[in-house]
Amino acid sequence: MKNTATREKLIETGAELIGQHGYNATGINAVLKTCGVPKGSFYHYFSSKEEFGLAVIDQFAAAYDAQLAELLEDTMTPPLERLRRYFAAGREHMHSCNHATGCLIGNLGQELSGQSDTFRDALDRVFQRWEHRLVGCLKGAQEAGELSAALPADTLASFILSGWEGAILRAKTLKSVVPMEQFEAILFQQVLVPPESNVGSA
Amino acid sequence: MKNTATREKLIETGAELIGQHGYNATGINAVLKTCGVPKGSFYHYFSSKEEFGLAVIDQFAAAYDAQLAELLEDTMTPPLERLRRYFAAGREHMHSCNHATGCLIGNLGQELSGQSDTFRDALDRVFQRWEHRLVGCLKGAQEAGELSAALPADTLASFILSGWEGAILRAKTLKSVVPMEQFEAILFQQVLVPPESNVGSA
DNA sequence: CTCATACTAGACTGACTGGTCTATTTTTAA
DNA sequence: TTAAAAATAGACCAGTCAGTCTAGTATGAG
Image 1 (tube, each protein chain N blue to C red):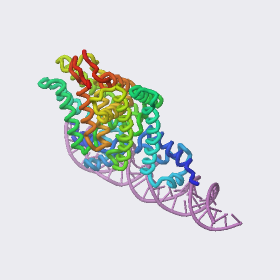
Image 2: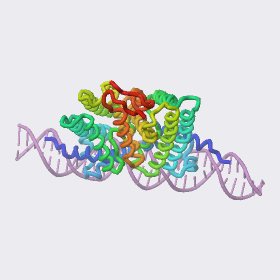
Image 3: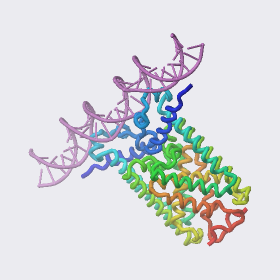
Image 4: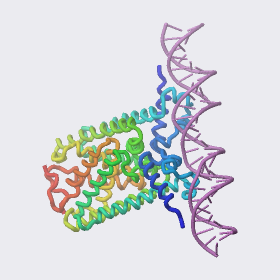
């Protein structure tokens, strides 16, 4: 029987520290000290820091995707309202980490995608799954008549994901969720508009 | 007379390496080896790596702001066309660095704003100057009747900056400028619209 | 019980980190 | 001409890094 508890503890601690300080700035020794695991165990479960980092990404992606599915596929709620709840959850998370962590995948994408193709591929897959969830929600909104069908859902999803990630970045440097609120405001006012409406008219 | 050539060479090399690998992953020795400057000179000009990093940011911000002013305040060109040129320049730069570097300020904002308030402040000031240039251009567009005056220019500028930074991040992880193109497409189709137009109607 | 495997434990290694130190050369000003 | 200041030069330091190594303990199968 495999003891996965230690492995999970390492990954959990790693996600926390890497989220706070980034991948390069997080030493293995710091992870070990934080969760009280000896080095021998670490290299029993992971062959290298890179493999560990990938495991952290995988674990985070799985948990995040589950949360995303729950929020964006909640059929009891109108599609655009699900999106609003998703944004609200993001803002809350930003508050709860004192505007310091932001989005682990976004952080690592910025830090590592120019450094290692293995990491870049892993992170890109996460982004694409994420985008795919958005596409589903947006198509639902179009079918429900909440959203103009004139805009292709996949382009829209890419637009939203980019904007949201950028807003998180700005929120980090500003130490305020205002950029996230501004992004959401204009997004719903100008982009996620019902069919045949006259938006933005002066 | 101060010999600023060596200092500038250090900053230039630093900007390049930090842009490629990030701040933490760029060692001082690597910078020195790349530009052939001995360590004694480095610590003659900079008291620490942090001060060096801030100098790199300052230098980059000044150069970037100058370029921004040239593009966005070119009165021979209609305001929204200036913005399109700015986006085109960004895409070209993304190509020219093989989708690896992206935006130095965005990279460092992601990497360092949770790590050091000094860095965070410096980077935030750059973002704000940048945003201010956008506000000017957007107000110009509103005055020229190219853009609905219903949307506050500062909220719009924040929206654009966030979206653009996020699109750059996505472009890095995807190794493709498509996210930047998608952002621009929807931005001009839905957000930067003339007064009283019926956009997005199905 | 016995033996192999899973796991824990942490001292240790070589490479590299940011930073210090002393010495030397070049430049400037008087 | 000379002395101070600016700048170059790189050996060196303590600390940290990812990763290795050996040893010991727990566990489960037969």
